[in-house]
Image (cartoon, rainbow, N blue to C red; front, side, top):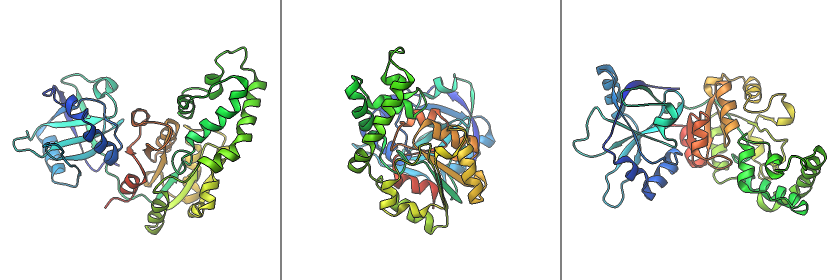
Amino acid sequence: MAKWHFNGWVITGLGQGAGFTSLDWVREAFRAQLGIELHPGTLNLRPESPADLATWSRVQTGPALTIAGQAGACDARCFPVRLADRLPAAIVLPEVDGYADDQVELVAALPVREHLGLADGDRVAVSGSGTRAVTAAIFDVDGTLVNSVDAYHIAAGRAAAPFGYEVTREAVRQALNGQYKFWELIIPDAAARSDKMIETLRRETMRHWADVLDQHVTVLPGVQETLEQLSTAGVRLAIYTGSRGESFAPLETSGLLEYFEFVLTGAEVEQAKPHPEGVLRCLDVLGVEAGEAAYVGDSVPDMGAGQAAGAVAIGMLTGAADSAALSAAGAHRLAADHTALIDILLPD
């Protein structure tokens, strides 16, 4: 994936990064263009060797994303990267006179020093994460192609209410991100959490699902354009969802399911995400090597499955997880929406 890399020493900056990354317009711009919901502050590096400095100098002359300055602030050029081959981040290069040639300032969705265990003087590897055009793209469904995450909250809430239980949006997201078993969050009393009760609540949830699906679930904005552009470019398309296909109806009625050569559901695999079985099966059917493919999803298990399969794991901010959780799960790139996604999958 990396087109370039260099090593840098961690140094202490001027302490202005927290103020910059807390500005509303800065946060909105980074989320829209890079999918990064900024953690306050920046990480500062100095290239380790003359060769590393030369690499950084070459990078600065290449393509970059531009963050337009507001309220008198300067513009900045941004380069998507991975730190220590683990954490998606971006180098920010302010377009001001006198900016030091050997200064590298980075932002991320997580506190980088704490997350990577870094201190002044430590070495960290920086790798460019600009992607080449992929040969295949495999998509999750819920929260990635359709906006069904909140619909699950509604259906489960309707099922649980007659029994005196409350379903929160946070519980749905925690379960979808693999943090907890869903009904254990909803029924905190273990004595009341019998297999019979859980089965009853599951059955009631699905009884409500048809109406909730019809009233609340739609294809996410930009999906049709994404699939059209990928198909026109010759990219092979597949679906791998951990569900049993309960949310396929909006894709079917809009004719979008026809774009996919292969569709695989959780009912057809032995190992659930984050195990890579489903992604690998899609790659096998498509006849595409993992390194030439992307797995696009919105949850922590999605990122684990994509990474474990050897594909490019792209985290969407349209569903279950925020960019901090997706970053911690090892996403290679982040996308706020399908407009940003197409720029990653089909770079100029």
